[in-house]
Image (cartoon, rainbow, N blue to C red; front, side, top):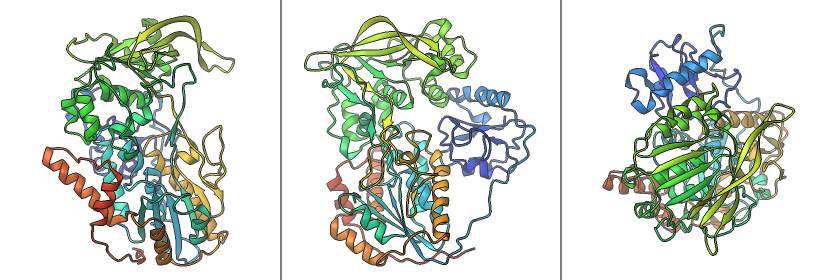
Length: 556
């Protein structure tokens, strides 16, 4: 197999488009595209040209001869995919579609609310049209959303997608209004009046509660908040994370839920702090982790190994980690399945644990019944489950009535995200989304990303999702269904700055970026994040302010 996709794959399909022989799957138009955990290279078709390596924004594709021991499982995973989904009868797809052109001459102005992956991919799609200029708003003074504040610090390759975003934000017709909160500093109605279209990509801002006794106790935290804490999110730096021996006398942390976020949190808490010193983890959390008394992190999954919420690439990454023990707490018969997860877990279960290392325990068929403690968390009552299939064949966890108590000084709930209402937009409380049709809320108002589809998918999923929403927006521009906005781009900028004089523009963000990288270079790290908003704004304010131009891009 000449090339292999590894666990840091962002699944945005850049490599699929670049491949000249259609050997990377699932491709656009095939079942599973934008939903698969990762992409796979067909060894029979690959001609070892390296085009996919150059196209990948996350350095996730490598020649098979350079795979590290931790990456070796991906050889079998790629082969297994093509055993199940053979592609010999598939003719090459037309990956690069003709560039759409607007029927109306423009110019058009679009506001994108949210500077995370969905917002940046949407801006990129819009800026393919020289008639369109894009203003990207975000509540924080820094862009990139969950790429900056959600991807684990030890997954630096995944964060390289920031380089793609940096190229997008320097295109003609692009502006930032960072540190501006829509709904507070400027209302939706004002944006709708001043732009041809407003596209919301604000994500899912809340986590789901456990709904059990004691979940309110100090020491019971959201994994979402913990991720923001160690990643330097300015809103999370005061999170009460106490990992000292007095707070965690048992040395144990319990994580409820076994998705990718749960694995990230467990791995970071069990990690040797010395390994984190070369990452972009926030300084304050790094200091807390240096003094941590944690020796064991137990991850509770309510169903069995085959139904685990984590992805295969993340499991491979954990099992390849040489700095922590990984232990599987499941009966042998529960791991007897032929699926990839069960196979990998059987392999992990046969390993010997090193008593000198911290341990991550993957425990299945277990649910929290109550959080215990007076004044703070001291333990978790855990119930045992069994699996039953309903009339539709869906496997569900059913409580057996058996319980036990795990001593623990910290509980993390990692049972999913939920979107909050967006000011002045309709809201579906059941899904935590804005009701829409393929991204269209109404002519002139659109959504993309998690606010559109719910908290699902990967970084690259937002690319195809944004393309669909932008297509609906372009349809409405062509059909003349949107009103002409009032004022011009300069007037809009003046109004926004009058509401938020400390807003951060592109030059300001680039100044923050340079300063963080400068600080990182002094200590051998990719960057040292600025976590105080006031300091961010001060760094941005000191940057030179180029005159903004709405020059149009030339068509090639």
